[in-house]
Image 1 (cartoon, rainbow, N blue to C red):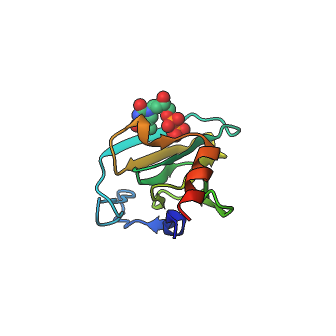
Image 2 (spheres, rainbow, N blue to C red):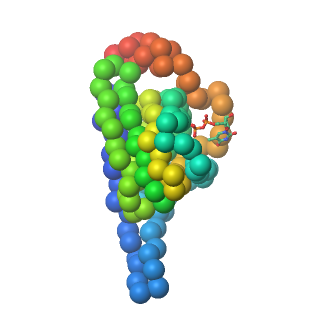
Image 3 (cartoon, helix red, strand yellow):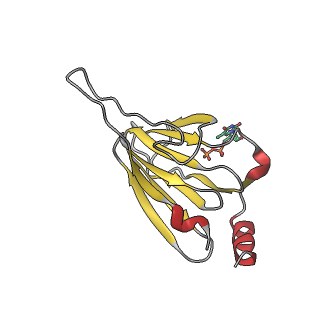
Length: 139
Ligand code: TYD
């Protein structure tokens, strides 16, 4: 079984009150890993495709804290699914070894990315064919 079936949307607790919204994301409680790295993506035009990689080790949770975008996830074996990120209290969980493309960014999109690992370029697979070959071998 590949990790593809572990991809899922997560709903985070909201503790808003009359002062405004508050959304909470705690490592190992609201998401299935401890958070080692946070980065965010904004200012991408609507025709830009980001991501386009799989990670041997890193797990991610992506949250559009403002605006909207889409995430396409592939298992390299013919299965793919598209998720819309359009609410600040909803995230997508991306385990290791799934291919992901982020696209269709709204002008106001701020895509917050939480990761289980520090940045290590050597665990990124950026060649789709290479990813497919690895996934086929694991069958
Ligand atoms: P990239 O992984 O292509 O961004 P995305 O997947 O969000 O489209 O990263 C772009 C550049 O930034 C690339 O040279 C690697 C570098 N980078 C880091 O140094 N640290 C990081 O945590 C990330 C996400 C990227």
